[in-house]
Amino acid sequence: MTVSVANPLIPSPWFSVWWNPRDTIGRIVATNPKHHVLLLAVVGGVSHVLSRMIFAGFTTELLDWRLIVIVAIAGAILGVGALYISAILFSWSGRMLGGHAPPAVMRAVLAWGSAPMVISIATCLIAVGVLKFYSRADAFAPAFPMLTLSITAVAFGSWSWIATMLMFARIQRFGFWRTVAGFALGYLFTIALILALLLPIRTFLFEPFHIPSGAMKATLLIGDYLLVSKFSYGYSHYSLPLSPPLFSGRIFGSAPERGDVVVFRLPKDDSTDYIKRVIGLPGDRIKMIDGRLHINGVPVKREQVSDFIDDENGGAEHVRRWRETLPNGVVHETLDLQDNGFLDTTQEYLVPPGHYFMMGDNRDNSTDSRVLSTVGYVPFENLIGRAEIIYFSVNRITPASQPSVRSDRIGMTVR
Image (cartoon, rainbow, N blue to C red):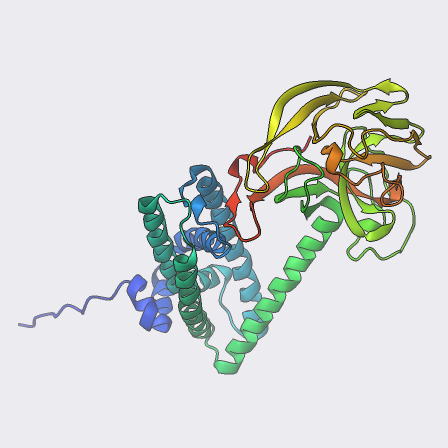
């Protein structure tokens, strides 16, 4: 009579991936290449975004449920998308060197190769969140999480990279140099794809911009990040990266409407981007009288609304706010910092053909077309695009203070 002896328990890949990545990926590929791959991609994407937030000092946002939801959704999409695209590119690079691993297998390699770093960062983020939850202190110092995440990223990131290389070599049956070459080709393909996707998007569709000054308060705040549609007014040579003077005028040109918030190149220095509101169209007569905007001799309708609370300098300054209605019905808000400001009463400006008159909504704190020596009339050719949506917003009260995310402004349209 013979007695069968059970094989020793095979360790879970969650454990064996740390010390034996080659055999781990071999078992995973042989049994189920999809095993926990999507889970690792989602957790990895979310962890990556959260760790970036903490590195940037956004620790107070760990209790903001709105921002956490946004981060979770964005991180999951980025993680899964990056995994699928990278798997295809690294599968191609392997095949060029004689490998035969399909994209499904490469997804398993990339997902499980990142497991050590994903697990360590996720654990660290949970610990930081627990500490933040129990501290409940707005002045929570970010030094601990930043130091912890730095050490974690270096140590476990290095091991994840080595583990991924070992897994790649195993499933492709590559030696050392072919593994290195395969990875190098994969990264080159990735960079080429990113450029191939981002350059057309940035040139023809949308370009991100950052608001560095308060000239457009209260519509746009310092620290707002927004997307500008490049197709709204057609394309000039300023639409191209580095703005090479390949042609003059605009292609597929479409005139802006009064009230549009527009990014344009400064006529006096075409290396500088400005963002203002279109107030005057070609042929219009524009004049300020005692702080009141006049267009073609008619005062623009306005009504005073609740004060704007400006906390930019750490205080709570109350600023008079007006709701202004332009002749075409566009309604927007303007701020009035003081009576008899430098630009409250001006000469009458006659907008030349093919040019536009731009003004900031923060009327007493905006260098715009009213200052002919600095901005003046803006040629149609200088328009970059129309501000569309705020995709991120940071409030940094002072340069030395801890920043915070204005989650309520994320997703706001610019009007």
